[in-house]
Length: 231
Ligand code: SF4
Image (cartoon, rainbow, N blue to C red; front, side, top):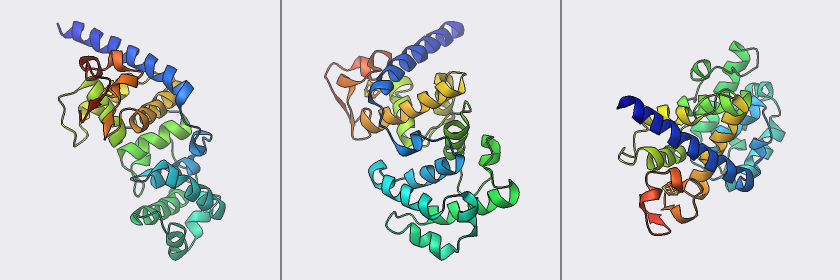
């Protein structure tokens, strides 16, 4: 029985992944941090994107990197200057943490962000999500990246009875099961999951009628309307 259910889960994950990638290759947005594998650029984008919309982050991202083109330049900057560069983006604790992270990377890692998620998690302001994001998006490691958007997609698609919060170990385990073992493809699947959560399976509205993974989604395949609200 247990084996059958594992096989069933694997089939669902494979079908979900196929639909997701096909859609992402056509509809994924061309965002600046998707065009780079520079770990410093990736970590700046990840700190900025926490609780902030993509459209707002883009301008700040370019300006910040012009002012601090390397992690060493950021580490050497006075705290007040870093704080000023963050003005208008909000949640200023992120700027303080990013600055402290840059100093720790220069002091402890010769100015190079580690690729190992365990080491990344020891840096200031880095939790499990950000560690996975840097490992995968910069170094193409097979690491899950479960933020609130991705957690929502996985919950609706695979575990519709799981509560919204906190992000459970089960959701993390499923996120890892969905990932291919190849780092480049894992990068793509993680980006695609985020994109689906941002554009189709949103917090406000699950647009199941237009969703590319509906056939593999435990919520979507049970709705008969073209849209499922508040799932
Ligand atoms: S089918 Fe609906 S609930 Fe499932 S992932 Fe797509 S939008 Fe979300």
